[in-house]
Image (cartoon, rainbow, N blue to C red; front, side, top):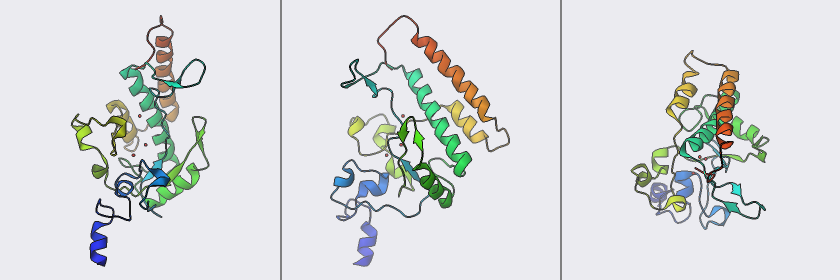
Length: 213
C-alpha cells in the first residue's frame, strides 16, 4: 500500500494531494482546493506570486471604475517584459546566488531569497515569495501552447511561458563569463529604450495597446 501511495503521489490518481500544485507550483482553486498543497521546506525554485503586471490587462477606464484592454504593440510588450525580467534577474542573482534557467543553483540561495523578498516591495506592491515544489518545468509547461495549438488561453491549467529576447538572454548569461557589463550601463540602455517608447506615445493619438511568474 505504501509503495502504491508513493507511486501515485502528485499524479491525477492521487485523491489527497493536488497534482496541479505539485507539477506547476500553483492551482487555480488556491486555498479553496479540496486537495492538499504540500509546500516544500527546501527547494531550488522560488515562486513570486503575481509579480509581473501585464500592461495589456492593467489599464483602467477614465473614471478608474473598471479595467480596459490597453493597446500595446508586440514590440512595446516585449520591451516591457524584458525590462521587468532584467530587473528581477539581476537583483536576485547579485543578492542571493546564481540562477539557472528558472531556479537557483543552490537550495540555500533560494531560501535566502524567499526570506528577504517577503520583506521587499516591487512596483509599489509587496512581494509575495514562496518555495515551489516544481523541479521539472517540462511537466509544467503546456505542450499544446508550445505547438501553437492551445485554445484555453488564460483558462489553461499549465504554464504558457513567454520568452525573453535573445539579446537580453545573451547579456544576462554572459555576465558570468568575464564579459560582465556594469548595471549602470544596463540602466542607461533601459532608460534610452523607455525614452524611445515615451516619444512614440507622444506621437499623434491612435488606438492605444499592443509577461505558473
